[in-house]
Amino acid sequence: MPAAAQSTFALSRIGQIHVTVEDLARAVRFYRETLGVRFLFEVPGMAFFDCDGVRLMLGVAERSGDARHASILYFRVGDIHQTHRTLADRGVRFEGEPHLVAKLEDHDLWMAFFRDSENNMMAVMSEVARTNS
Image (cartoon, rainbow, N blue to C red; front, side, top):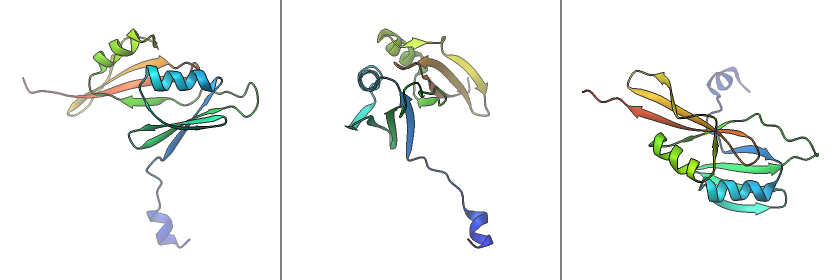
């Protein structure tokens, strides 16, 4: 690759994220029914969902005991408090209440962390614009 091409090359857009699960059927129910993520299709050992243009793949570990809980998906939401109430009412196990993470120049960043059916850490996040009052 020429030096000019190397300096302009950059990865940016994520096409798919993989989350390892122990029980695929249980995970599919959780993401589809509890979280309401749009289900795309399923093949042996894998299920795919659409997260507003980014494909989420749930996959069974290739070897027993290989499930790793390392990735965190952050779902962007408009009203984090309402989302928290809705998901908690559906039985989602939150690690705590929605909380302010950072006061940025023109908005505040809020997050709330929860566990999926496979004990993977997930989060909902909301960027709340500040009003001049």
